[in-house]
Every structure is written in structure tokens, then in C-alpha cells.
Image (cartoon, rainbow, N blue to C red; front, top):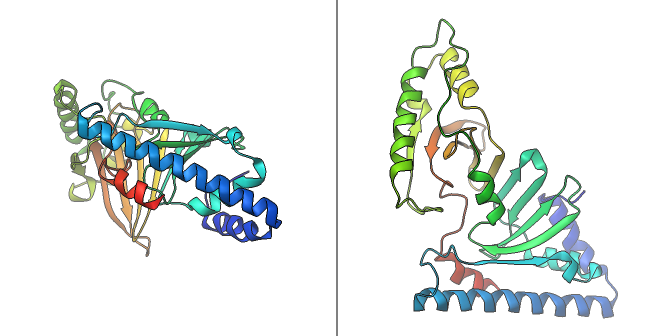
Length: 268
């Protein structure tokens, strides 16, 4: 089973020089051809944005390359060259996965638990993630687990529903925002253990699970309520720095910004 781990990436890169000279040269030429194609598509889309032929937020770019287009003997070399970024996304508990590469805007997508179907996707965010994000309940359900020590949870759910209603009524909400979204920080609330249990039980967990690796680790999950996400930031010592509910179609930390496409072309 193919994975996204650093160890696997290192293994791929170490394996690439072991190719025979003829195959290694062909793999390098195939990699150059692919990166040239990616760069040309980015540059063409940036020109379309500049000319007003494409949305200014970069959402119009969605190019796909199936791995079947590449010689299997070249894949390890190609993947090792592209490297891996900081975003890892699981859909439906791992039935599909997406991860960014070192080229901003270029993603690798796998489907099936054994990762047998592989694609490269050039986009701010693979469309499959956006589509899954549109699933969910329209309203927050009735409070679950209303135990004797539940005090703050009903008011928090009421506030979230009020914000969701306002969000749904705003026709100008972008599909992939770049600005901060409404956030309700749980660590600032006077929550009892029962409150936390009630919130988690009521809002549940959806089908998108995102890990962002950096100086700190971010864990973002959608709830079973549409446009409502839970985001946590954890430092290297394992301490939770932020635990909050966020309202967005997609939290802005997950997709790249349109401005990063130029960096992607330069990286190619």
C-alpha cells in the first residue's frame, strides 16, 4: 500500500538512482516533460485570470493526469522529484486520499484503500474534496447526551446555528476563502466534561479528515453538519493550542491561494 510518509518519500528518492542509466534518463526526461506541461497550464491559467477569462480566485483551474499516462518504471523517480508538502487529506476514512506535493497547486490523489488508482491534480484543491464537503445536515440536530453537567453546550449550539443561518443566507460566500472565517474557540468557553461530550456527540464527524504538518500540527475535520468544521492546533509537545468550530465551505488553511500558482510555476 502506497503511503504519504516521509520515510516512503525518502525510500523512493533513494531507489531512483538505482535505475539503469537508460531507464533513469528516460525517467528524468518524462519528469521534465510533465513539469513543463504543469508549468504551461499554470501560466496559461494565470493569463486567463489576468484577461478576465477565468475566476480571479483561481478556482477555475482543475487539470488531471492519471498515472496510467506514465511508464510505471518512471513513477518512483517522478514522485521522489516532486516530493511532498504539508497537507494530507483522508476522505471516507481513507477510501480516498489527497496530499500536496512540493509544487504549490499540484496534488496527488489516491482512491481505494490499497491506493490502486492514482492521479495528479492541478488545482487550489482537488474537486473531490469540495464535493464531499457539500454533504451533511442542513441544521444542527437536537442535543445528544444532555447529562446533568451540561450547561454551556445548548447556548454554543444555538450560536453556531445562528451563524450557519447567516452563512447560508450570504450569496457572496466563496467556495474556497482566503480570509479567516467565523470561529468559536472552545478553550475560551466554560465547558464541563459533559458539555464537551454533548457537543461532540451532537455535531459528530463527517467524511473529511485533514492533517497539516508544520511548526505545529493542525487537525481539521468536518462535522456531520454542512459547512461546520472542527479545527485543532497541537504543538510538538502535544499541547492543544486551539480547539474551535469553524464555519466555511472549506477552511482557508486547506487549499492553496490563487497567488501561490505563480510559485508553482517557478517551482516547476
